[in-house]
Length: 87
Image (tube, rainbow, N blue to C red; front, side):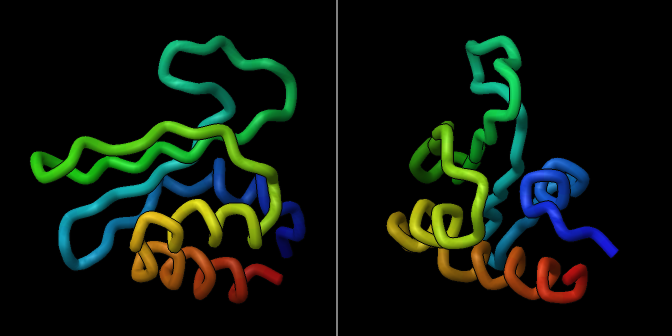
């Protein structure tokens, strides 16, 4: 059973919602080298808006705030469901 949220996010290929928005997580930003234990959220909104690449804290609340703060509630819900299966 996996208990580390960062490890969980990095182990998954990502999540996609019904509108084609995709979120993946990485240990580096788009133009960054890995720096220890960082966690980066990479949101791809396709041709509509572009996306977002942001360093986030390594806890569910910070990831929820980052996604829901830009209206990606469906993506957060998918992550939350998968995480709850792990813990």
